[in-house]
Length: 321
Image 1 (tube, rainbow, N blue to C red):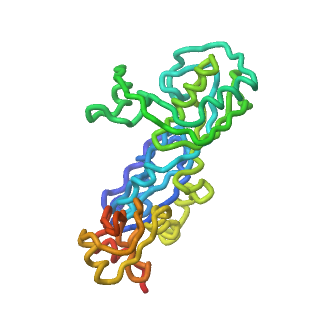
Image 2: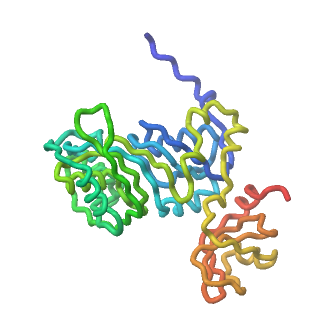
Image 3: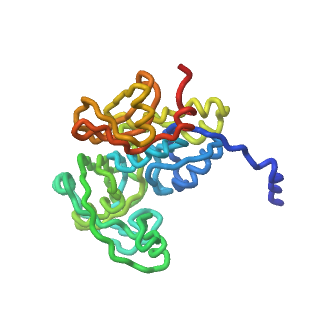
């Protein structure tokens, strides 16, 4: 069968437009975070977009996508706590720590319910974790996975992470090997693949990850997400209606509203004085709290600008009052 001819360039070209807000996507399996971002950006015809932390192609679940002005606050989601469900296969280690890698070691599995309970207790609290070679972390400007694909191992400094909650239970799978289901709530920077490998070593048999799903991040849950298939089936108006407002990323910030004069000065990057309590995370508004200006901190009665929206962004995201 002959491949279909590509449509003319003028038919493929889409006119971009300013789009502002947050789309909560249930990332499907098999897509990289960047590929799915570009797909959704194309569907929305958005000028500017960014994601809030990568999910591996073999992982699914909550992936907040930021558009326009929301990209200025995407770091907040990068820094947010995460919740995952996962399945790890015991007795088999792979080169990548997941099912994509080659098998590098097999061991007998003699794990009891008491063993699982004992090891589970060891993986709660502050831990030190060495990032995997197959990750997007960079060394000398180059992603670690690029070194790994070239067969080069580089030193990686251990990082401090925190596991707030972990549940482990024997899993039923179609595979011969035994498996464990995990439910993990953790701090930013936690690699669940590495966690599974470390748990496997603590159990004395080794392990690798065979399934991973992010069920929550920074207060957003998978129940709030839209699937790619649903998004593709929608009209443009319906897709835009799925967007949360820019300040959905600022739910943990203390709101401060300024009068017109102070709002103008704050938007110019000037500090303002007022009777505000000290706070590290402040969302600053004008017009009775209906116009988002940006974020700030408060120290000793001074409102200190952090991330500011531009005048055109403010105009485009402000509802008609």
